[in-house]
Amino acid sequence: MGMTITEKILARHAGLDFVEPGQLIEADVDMVLGNDITAPVAIKEFLKLGLDEVFDREKIALVPDHFTPNKDIPSAEQVKVVREFARKYGIKNYFEIGEMGVEHCLLPEKGLVAPGELVIGADSHTCTYGALGAFSTGVGSTDMAAAMATGKVWLKVPPSLKFIFYGKLQPWVSGKDLILYTIGDIGVDGARYKAMEFTGETISSLSMDSRFSMCNMAIEAGGKNGIIAPDEKTLEYVKGRVKRSFHVYESDSDAVYEEIYEYDTSKIEPQVAFPHLPENTKPISEVGDVKIDQVVIGSCTNGRMEDLRTAADILRGRKVHPEVRVIIIPGTQEIYLQALREGLIEVFIEAGCAVSTPTCGPCLGGHMGILAKGEKAVATTNRNFVGRMGHPESEVYLSNPAVAAASAVLGRIASPEEVR
Image (cartoon, rainbow, N blue to C red; front, side, top):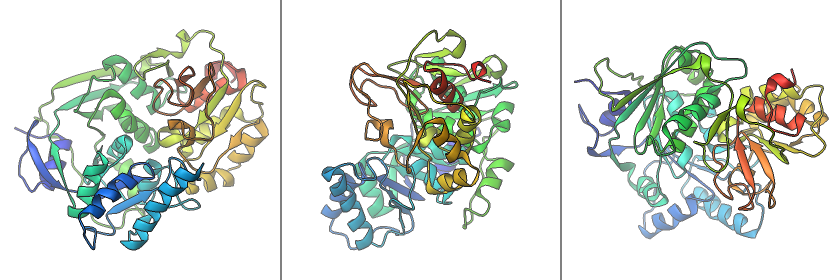
């Protein structure tokens, strides 16, 4: 019996020839990630061990990105804990403002994740790196502490679900729409502790940016990880970024899946997830008249170059609706700089948008765009839970960057076709 790509990666890192769903393993990790919210808790637990060294100074990444630039004294104290730990233990991959980015945009960009690797992070959206053909998953801060000390993690091998996408995408449809559609189909618990393997001709045609968006939101269906087998696009992306050897895996033809789903993407419109769950999706043609107060374009889901280019394509030569606030947040400094070089920042500012330094900011209700009572926002972020972006009586609607930009212009949730 064959294995899935997820099972193969876990088997190798556990030093085993074969693993199966439900099996408990102890696996070696290639990267341990923490941010300014989760790392301080992990650091506190690590220090209790009384160790003089971490397991590997090059295999830990600390990225203060949630409440940075520090919004208040408590957030400044949080980052100070992380900064001092990084200095004391010689953590090579510590990234602060001026050189940092939203962690799940930053690590792939810096070549800190490669195909076939095992990555854990004290952040649920660590599953993003599955777009590179890595097994990556979120863990708790205590697991992060143990991994910083030992380089190992305990895992239960997840069963795999296979999602086959075929057909030609409609205009303005991207990976964000495919994953929203999928979550709308199977629900926010439809893949609970399962590997979501995305494949098919449509996936092969997607850009890396769209693939990152899809794997990023696997957790919103309850997935243990999302993963896409590496192809030429993947290898081209990591070329020049990853400076070490790595192994490319793919699923065996006789691998066993708990369930297989097939989607004809030619029938999928741009999607909008209504409050207060990512599964509450509607095609753009069925949204109706929903007036909005704010638009956020950015986050670890949609703060990459493709996303900014799409938004700029719609906003170029237009003005933001006078009753709408628009916040654009590039995912990393490199993305910000590239957007500057391409003139996209000028497009945004001339349209009436505010452009921020890289930060998670409003995505988790941190800062840089908190909603007041009764306000509604369209966001390219990944969650729209009650109170996620501010007041518990505010509302967040999730969409791709094209829908978000069109909505910014018209002052209501809108299709990009309405402004083109």
